[in-house]
Length: 272
Image (cartoon, rainbow, N blue to C red; front, side, top):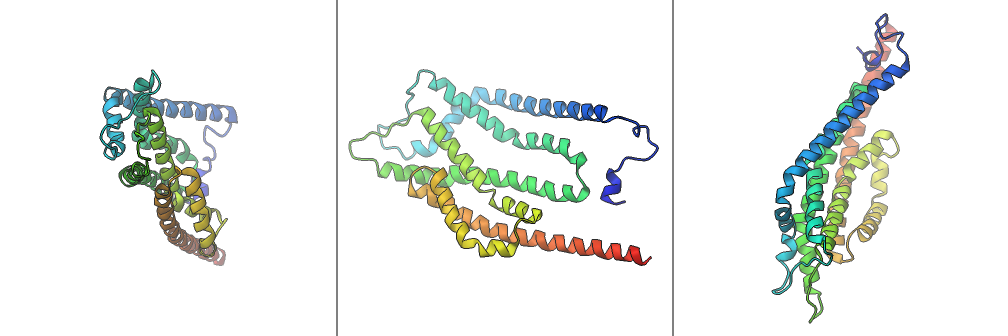
């Protein structure tokens, strides 16, 4: 049975005379159920993280605390900062942990309306995007943050005590996580562009020089104003761009092979 046939309604079934309104209502009910499940999971994990919010913040501050000279420390400028900063971090950590669950709920809602071929393409892309985002955040925490803070501590003028506000530090780290997490999605973005037919692997190769310049410009804009973090974002993005070209080439060749098979099967059907 073809994809189109598998999605077509069965003739003579009880739903043939149904109006679009009940179907739309069913979709809205399903969407509401998926949203409730996703939000409920997020709230449960968030509440589970709340008792450990201060420990989470201390762990997140480790890259900076390890580089600070003796006598320097994190400070709270605002009255509510000691409460709001760990609370914000607990919510962000809960969001990161429940992201697979949230994406699963979105996939379970959308998947029934997709062709089998679309499912074969969408699911690997979704999983790859999630893994790459986590990889970008891990790269930022374990490699970039220690290097950046080590550089900033070294260039601190003599006589200046480096004391960072806990809210400012949290915002700095979260922005860096998002910047690296999103930037690591380059291969997925290139594969999607190739699947849509907007670019070809050959065009991606030809545009490599422009892409490198654009990557360094993006790294300069979205990272803190220090050379270390800019280079540590730009270099992985250049590598990921090359990986994206390879993935786009593989997807394009696989797509051509499937199209040839479809054409051959269509020709055989006509001959019969």
